[in-house]
Length: 314
Image 1 (cartoon, rainbow, N blue to C red):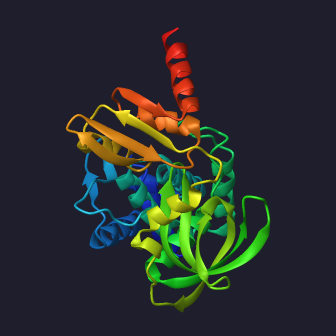
Image 2 (cartoon, rainbow, N blue to C red):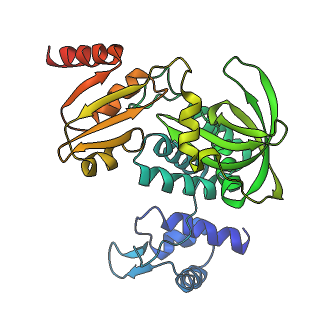
């Protein structure tokens, strides 16, 4: 076992957060106790807070420190991390979703292809509790991360895309921003071959490949990517959703602001609206407001909510 391999193996063992005696570590690593002590000292020099306790039941353990040190993950842990982060990206609060997307941007690029495929397969075969199975399409985490990084770095990117009718095409774009609407992500970008702005559903994109060609960012029509996406979704066949929620905007923003536009009516109630959202998901979103709901549109959504209330109170 090479020195670097042994060092990473030692770190992996300590990250289990159990106590390891020096003899146990020496046996696992197939080295002397003196080498174990020297490697422990090297970890401490790198900022890992390794504590040593003497006596029966004592040993070495990785403690909490002032800053998060680099972590070593095995295959199963890495796959679980990607799946969990992607679930948070699609179902968490705005703050957590943005942080999860940044974390994905660090994890996915260094993930071996075989593990990325496992994570994608697991995500695609799992139905989250906070979404209807019909509304959620699996998103390749590699594509999502590639889009996010291209937006951040102002780099052109190419990808394969299928539209709503299933027609396939190759796209070459200058990405501007990722927008979340309901339980889907859209990429707002300038399509170089069509010489116009477009929004692309991320779950319909594959084989995203950054071109490492930087560009000067253009101004999105109307100056707002979210409004551009919503404007494009109108007339798509899914009815607009609106309702009055009897709670303040300050309370509703962290709860449902990621899915709904919130317009304050008075200090104790708000009008919330969204477009192109699956009605089951919209009903769940309204319930997340944790307050009385009235003036619900469309009629189908009112019927769905009434059915839920009736079934829950039966």
